[in-house]
Length: 201
Image (tube, rainbow, N blue to C red):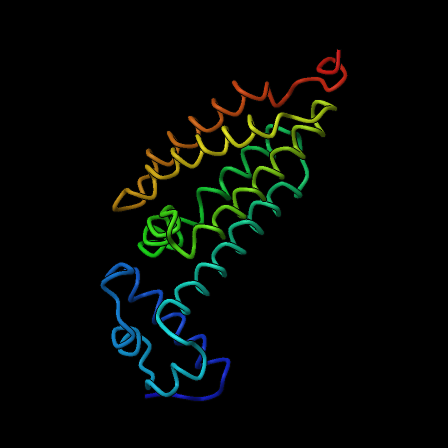
C-alpha cells in the first residue's frame, strides 16, 4: 500500500475509483473495490473521502468542470461562427471518448432525477445554454428564446447519448453525431454564417 503525501494519495484514490466505477458501474462498486484499484489502505481512503458516494460525486464534479471549460475554451478561441460551432461540438464529443466507460456511468447516474448528480448535471446544461445563447446574441444581435435553446441542448444531449452508449469510439458514429447536431442547431437557430444586420431586420 502506498501513502506518499496527501496530494498523491488523493489523486491515486480518484484514479482507482475512476477505474473501479468504469469497470463495475456505480451500484456494483464498493469501497473495497476502490481500495484494491487504488492500492491504498482503508485508513488512507477515509482521510480524503467519506464514502464511495463522496468520491463518485467529486469525480463527477471534476469531470463537469473539465467539460464546461473545454467548451468555453473552444468558444473563445476565435474564428468565424461556423468554425467556432464546429470546434465547440468537437469539444462536446471529445470528453466522453477520453473518459471511456466512466463517462457512461456518469451519464446514467446523472440522468436519474433522484441521483445526487442530477442537480449538478442541470447546472452544466444551464452553462451550455448560456454559451449557446451568447453565441446567438453575438451573431444575430438579439437574444434567443431560452426554451428554444434548452430544446436544442436537449436534442444534442440525446444524440450524444448514442455515442456514449457505444461500446467503443466509432469515428463514423461520432461524425454522424456531429453532423446531426450541426443540422439541428442550424435549422433551429439559423445559419451560423448569417449576417447579424440582416438578422435584425
